[in-house]
Length: 128
Image (cartoon, rainbow, N blue to C red):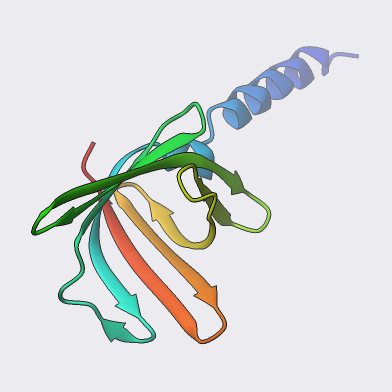
């Protein structure tokens, strides 16, 4: 019976610790600029500039910079913590792209997308 205060303290501490943990959904929020793109093992030197803005409400904006201007697409995103994947569904095309999250730490995001005969690897840095 004398251990109740210690047990209550431990339970409260554990609850606070768990609620303050950063999961992938919180870590991915923000604006990301692509640093590297590799398609089928070949580094892409002429890829257009690509920025993802991932918003807490479950939406995202993708901006690609081309010599003639920019192209902006929007959509919704979700993360499957168990599979460690990021699903992006583009509003304009209803295209679904499933990215495997290779690394998501601090200001670094590395993802891969695989289809038969096609592998895309991308590395992003957080810019805001």
